[in-house]
Length: 328
Image (cartoon, rainbow, N blue to C red):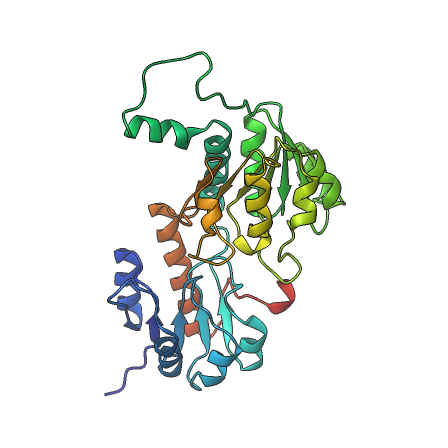
């Protein structure tokens, strides 16, 4: 007898509690392996599901959507970013898209500060010395880093995560500056103690730390390009916990290698898992495997949002976190 429950296909392994709840509510197909689906597996999944639950690493482009079945009516992204989904084409085909905004704000902001401290205080170098048993004792001149209190941080993208970074940076005694598509409301800017820069060029030239907290869109691709990196102070540091495509990685690697930048802390990369080998070789670079949102609490909350979006859709209503192309 056919089920009246929605057919839901999940493309990656999710926390056990999330998978269990999905199984209770829907006719769900879970992923046995944590490996990403192949292109053909993804097309096949889109062809037999009412709801597809992809992650931010799954490419849902116009070609895949054209081959999706007539059943597919909702793409419930497990993640806040949607630059992996052709939202406009999905809308044209009558497919809604939802995401999980706001869940990873604090986690990602925490990681931004962690990377900034790791770079400026040379934490990985100290860790490597201890693990290699090369430490011979305290020295007045060993592992000298820099104090962050009093430094200027320039936040590129002052959305929820950017504002959370601003609050943390202010608590460390930093001067907060930002560049955004539009200024914050006066009361928010005053609460954050944040100074707006209409010109990104002028901001990057004056900052000690640049924190990338904007999404990847056509207008932000290589926003931090070779020309802008050249404007930065040699003592400046770049931290990116947003999207790798915002930085021209080759230009960044050259500047770091030539001593034109003091360091970088990167949790995301321009070409996904293909990390620029030049960055791996530099002692003034801290690299992490996209860990910014990786907390138990955050992953569980993301799952709850996915379930609410699907359940609301199943009940005949608009998902609370529906993504609209005009908002991107």
